[in-house]
Image (cartoon, rainbow, N blue to C red):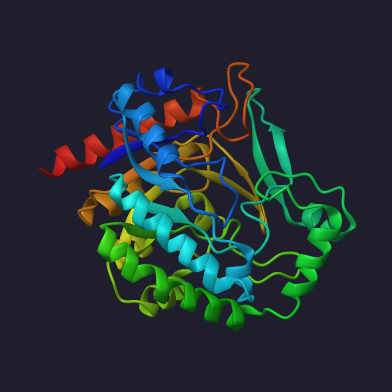
Length: 346
């Protein structure tokens, strides 16, 4: 297992010098954020990011993410050109030593929450999702400001994009994902890169938009589109775990050979399609983190792991879900689980 940490570049309040002090931290997970979605990343920017990491004693072998342009998800007239740009990014990242690319295929909205700072009894705060609150929202009417979606859209642009998606149901989205994978996976194979799709977060449709990377059946379908090790998964426990019907340890064992990156975090399910993010340990939420890590160890997992969304604790201010302190505690907890499980079995 290779322990990594998400870093959002020089504007991130969490610094590389702080990340390197987390015990056994091997590398960062980052991206070139200055290039518009759909365009080719400059080789100089990739090299600079790698140099920043290595100068702090950290590797840069996982990219999260190379975003998939909406035209590709829509199967629009510019999709072919944008897929070729995507393939070029895969080639350039492979040349720079990147081993895994995390990406998602969620239409319009990335991970979505209804609250940024739900206050818990201990005084910490975290991200939370309440289905009834979300159902009352109308993104097309403007005024929606939540994490996980592209705020670069003006209100008219967003309205037009949502209108185009009215013609895209789940099967159409599957078809467009198939087109994308059939073009990108051969390039990834040639470049020594493993593609690792991130599950939809949360794993159900919203605002009339389809979501398809949600459950064991759909993961199996996705992996069968191109039967290649390069067509793999980012196994996010918080995303998949928001649906109690997803048996996470069983899914890990079922797809072990195709899991290249793992996001480990816990959530507390508070109602039907309602949850709040918690500290990482099992007693803090609804997910059995020991069983999850045990399934990874039993499956011989030796890929990349990162502690995912953490609470804001000890008065820290920063990017919601991505503070230093609680994620560092999560990293230590993950290491403790891993050492206890693997040493007991050795």
